Amino acid sequence: MVRVGLAGIGFMGWIHQLAYRRSKHATMAAFYSRDPKKRTGDWRGIQGNFGPPGDHIPVEGLEVFSTLEELVRYNGIDVLDICLPPHLHASTAILA
Image 1 (cartoon, rainbow, N blue to C red):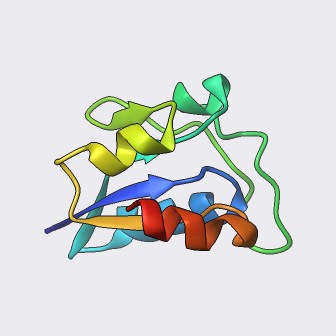
Image 2: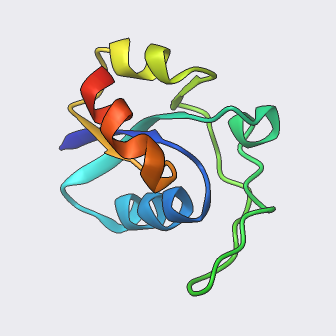
């Protein structure tokens, strides 16, 4: 099972975590969000152009980080899924 660290909890992060929940090959093990509310699992404010709106997710068993640097340093993930705004993709990939 591939352990994923999700960087960014906006609409795309929401859609990706839905996919990881259904996957037999990958699981979300950790995530990073600047938003304290989202770090508690309250993703109900997320809206997008398609797919379901955000909801409350259980965070028990997940590592939750308030900085991207902490997530990148965490040894409990195999893959970093960058779900941040496009202008942050390159710098995040370089950091990782």
